[in-house]
Image (cartoon, rainbow over all chains, first blue to last red; front, side, top):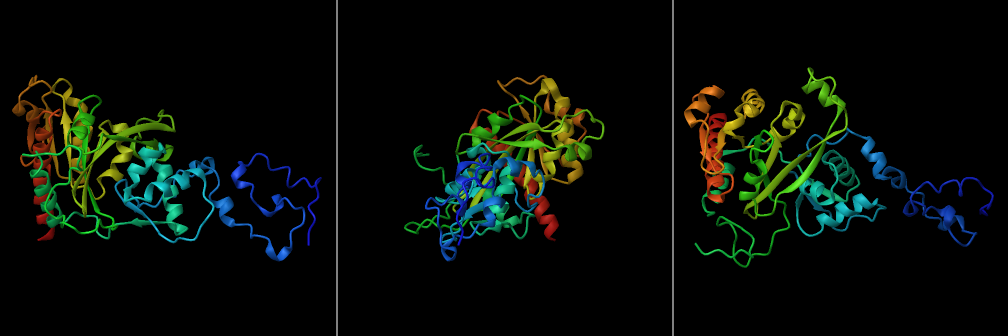
Amino acid sequence: MTYPDPDDPVAPARPGVRPFLQSGPQHSTGGYTPTGEQPPVEASTNKLRPFVITSGRTDGGDPDIGMETQVTLVHGAPPSRLSPETRAIVALCEESPISVAEISARLRLHLGVTRILVGDLRASGQLDVHVLENDTPDPDTIMRVIRGLRSIS
Amino acid sequence: MDFDPSANRVVGTARIPGAPAPKKAPVPVKIIVAGGFGVGKTTTVGAISEISPLTTEAEMTSESVGIDNPGQATMKTGTTVAMDFGVLTIDQTLKLYIFGTPGQTRFAFMWDDLVKGALGALVVVDTNRIDDCYPAVDYFERAGLPFVVGINTFNGQMSYSVEEVRWALAVREDVPVISFDARFRASVRDALLVVLDQALDKAIRMKS
């Protein structure tokens, strides 16, 4: 059983964090929260923190995630707290499969950043990333592309 | 040929009437369109793409500069390079992506990524600035990626003939050097078909 101390430097010392991240138990309005009902402080709050942090990671993007790699939404994925950028990615994937390059272009996110965020969302089970088992093109696929191209005017 | 511009340009015959739209992700394939600044890469991509070309930005990292540009140590980190690309839906299970990439050596850091899994490349050449395409030709030769040299004729004018360009580039006999007009869909389609021919040759050779 804890009573938040208004003078406690911990809670007021966080104004630098963007508002949507300030949803930990220390901000419950009642002043009294039964310990048993306290929502767990999610690790993802920190993991998916601002774009600023992610953009600091210049590598760490999965090399299997190419520009043309298709991404789809995992339906019924457990809800998780997302940053505006990752939420936007999830929203883009809702309708139909979309490539990493299209996500990057439509959200005006750098390709490298997009890759890292897509990798994060894949790791947290929000997105399916369809990595091809075999990235050397086979003759049948090429023939299909040729036939498809020939039929356009 | 009848053409409904409002409809998606879905080509091929794989769509089964009445079948529900599959949620399954299509298999993506890609072709690279490379060349110097202003040779018509974006025009080429736009002519064939079913969407207006999108732009994605990649960041040049200090690491890649170190690896790919040992001679250009002064290159600042954090330089951004824009890349245009388009999409062509072949059928519901197959999508062709066309990536336009700058052809200068200092952008070569992106090419490794691009070339991975690519069917082939079209190197766009402006006969007024032939040497702009040398780095791309060098790179694709070394990477073993099937490529075609496409001279963009703009308004039907070429300062040099196809033979002269071939001589200047000194590409292998089996590398096609063709001329095309980046503004016209049919012309770009034919140029890409030559690339695909090369890709098919290589794929068949690899298989056997």
